[in-house]
Image (tube, rainbow, N blue to C red):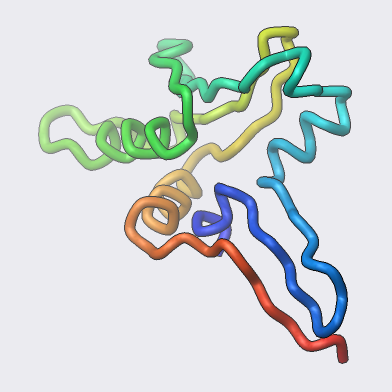
Length: 124
């Protein structure tokens, strides 16, 4: 489910107004004082434990796709535990998105499954 919630979702509970829930890394950045109108859009950075920063991406799906391709390639695959994706702002705020083996599961959920945009629940 974690991979399917990368865009955030709306929570609709019986009779209550729909409530927006951003992805957890945006909530973590906001807790650090992130303001999109000041800091701009965050970027996603794929890092290798030994080689450092590999690439920067404008969205998390592209970072997940590239990370998964490194792990699944035929020649010289990269071990999943050596990769991490962070979300960063221009002002220097950084929060982890996913690392290690969870990257494969999150990539599969995010790239191969239908995105969840609204979650409905009963109030009891």
